[in-house]
Image (cartoon, rainbow, N blue to C red; front, top):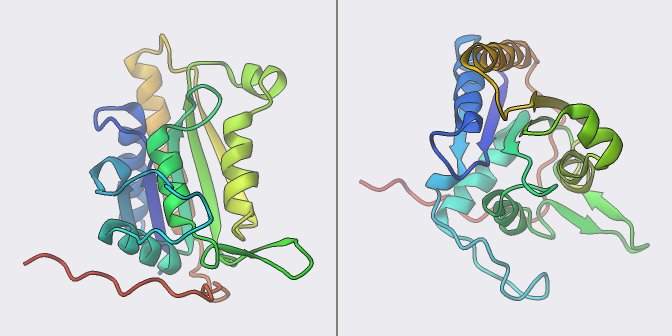
Length: 214
């Protein structure tokens, strides 16, 4: 059984991103995958790296659980809007805090980076008010490049698919329903992926996962 982690990076629970994440997760689960849906807005954590990468900043319990979910996952899906050519501060802070040096990546003696989450696949789903051609040709596709190249591939993910949803501005209910159907089909398709036997385990193990509250 394939394990899929769906990261909802939108701060609004009534957003299109939230609906897309739920629809994908429901379809993948119905198709037989073991799915964890992680809405970042429901986590309690400080999104700021107060000393940058120079010091230790202990992870909050919700981020420890997120690290364990990342380790367990065969396939990771990140759903986020394009805001100012980037991602929401909530998602950026989650990535800054969770993808720790020595856990998600490290630098070799020759100075080149090594991703420590190898063996996993991923999908990035971005919503945008701008047409796709505008983002790719005129804006450099900065959000996708940030998530795919500078984050997921940097941490060892090699096969990363991209799904663009838009233009959202001015879209009607029929168009949004079609987008939801589209991600549901992606969820069913991704659920058919076999479980990965080649998943790397980070050298720096996550902290012990906090026990659930009684």
